[in-house]
Amino acid sequence: MKMVRRVVIVVVLCGFAAAPARAQLVVNDPGNTIQAVELVRKAILEYERLREQYETIVRMSQGLGNMGRYRTVPIAFTAHDPARWSYGAPWLTGLNSGDPRGDLYARIARTMQRPAAAALARLPPAARRAVEDAYATIEITDSIAQRGAHQVALVRGYGGRLQEIVQILESDILNPQASYHQLTTVLDKVAAGELVGRRQDTATNQLLSHALEQLLAQSKRRRDTEVAAMNMRLVAMQEGRALSRSYIAGSAEALRTWRQP
Image (cartoon, rainbow, N blue to C red; front, side):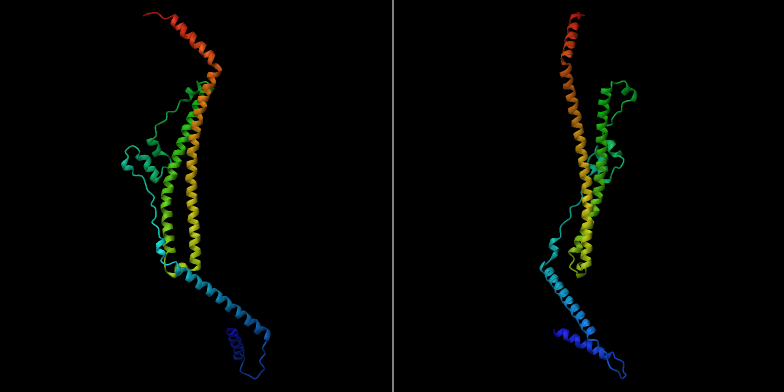
């Protein structure tokens, strides 16, 4: 209350001092004076509240002690050493630096011979469909392997840059200077940390999507194998007797007509 009284006295004195130096009555509005005093009182209370909060934050930061103990050693992104592997070096190089067209992958993958259109046209529809499905499985597998390897190389290079940004954020957070811990500075670092986290999530999701594609390709390959085996069993079940009779008849005919050379 002493502070408020002092403010009232100062306001009143300022009112008298501001009056012009000529003989006239000073007009003083009590309502305006009370309103001004109330505004000053609220400003003082707000200032005291902010100062208490600041002192509390300072005490909390001092209680943490040496922040350097929270510093961690970054995990470096490792790369393949193509010089160690004579035959796999091309694709290992692609895994390190990228292989957008799959040329490096093609150098280490066995070349697939493609049938001529005329050869496929001579096959029965069912046989032609089986050959085309088998080629489709190989092509899908190649495409997923090429895209996945290129994405791994991109994430490897991108991850190194993200690691550098994380180290910068760590240095700013653990810096003992007060200028690094002002309100706006702290909010900027929080926003930067969230942005880096979202970038890391995006890269992780991309890698997971390529891993899922690999699993889907493997599932299709297993399905094609199981379908081929099941079709063979179905043919044996449906035409087994006729095939057995034909086989026996052919064997008997061969034995009957066989002559000692």
